[in-house]
Amino acid sequence: KGLQKHFPIHSGAFRKVVGHVRAVDGIDLTVYPGETLGIVGESGCGKSTTGRTILRLLEPTGGEVLFNGQDLAKLKKEEMRQVRKDIQMVFQDPYASLNPRKTIKQILLESLEVHNIGTKQERMQIIEEIIQVVGLQKEHLNRHPHNFSGGQRQRIGIARALVLKPKLIIADEPVSALDVSIQSQILNLLKDLKRDFNLTLIFISHDLSVVKHICDRVAVMYLGRVVEIADKRTLFENPSHPYTKALLSAVPQANPKAKRERIILTGDLPSPANPPSGCTFHPRCQHATEECKKVAPQLQDIGGGQLVSCHLYKELFSSQH
Ligand code: SF4
Ligand code: MG
Image 1 (cartoon, rainbow, N blue to C red):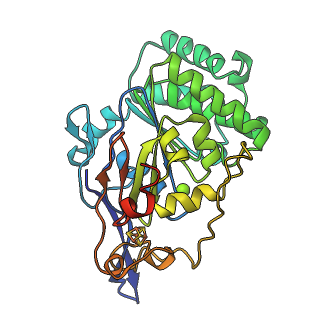
Image 2: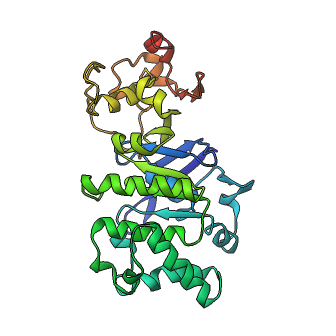
Image 3: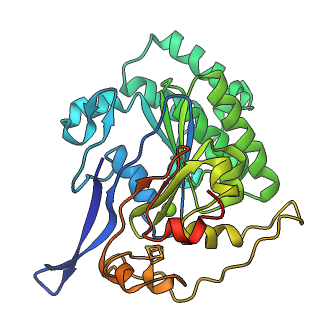
């Protein structure tokens, strides 16, 4: 609720704060148990920062993160450590997040040890089971990260997230570093695990075709804000925000009959250190009015579980709704 993460910009020898990068600028998002919520947007839109701020890998500047009735933003370090059992993260580059000196066994045991779970024997049982659940073998436990391919390393990253039996997994671009042929294997694995382990997933990606494959609902972010949220089908068939439309128009269509006008976004992504006035999308929006330049639109419920932040959604898309 109202989640914010602003990074100070320092300058000069005294590192005086001369401004802020408003990476996440007041977002409201709900994740329902058992669903996969996608967060999409161009790089720099604040989607990774959102994921990290939820887990307090980055400290939120403002707002609340409500999980099982408690506000994670207010928890003390030790209390937060307890919650980390329930919320785990899977990263884009598993290699960078796996200690190269340790064996897979050591890497997987570490989380269990930190959280004091089970006896030595029980821990071994857990990791031997998990390594097979993610499609590797027990024999792999004694090897080091460099012995594995990118796809296998992501399986290990997922195993590490799973050993603590979390309720929520935040996956940040988990397949973006992988070959396309491997991507769908990992996506299918995540889908199966979600079902088998009763997981809830926040899936962060810049790639709409990946999101389409795995998500139930999708939130679109632009410059630190959510501009549209809808269930997957509605978002792909009836996008209502001009930015969502532009993003989707760049995705190749499977159905050639469903012709979609290609919308080219003009202008660069503005800097979140100096966001445009009013609707922050206005310099790139072909429909922008004087009002758009002055007044920031609020995210509003337009029915059918769809929320949109645009002054003109009714006029622009009345034919669809
Ligand atoms: Fe475009 Fe105005 Fe809607 Fe912003 S509020 S997306 S500028 S039409
Ligand atoms: Mg990112």
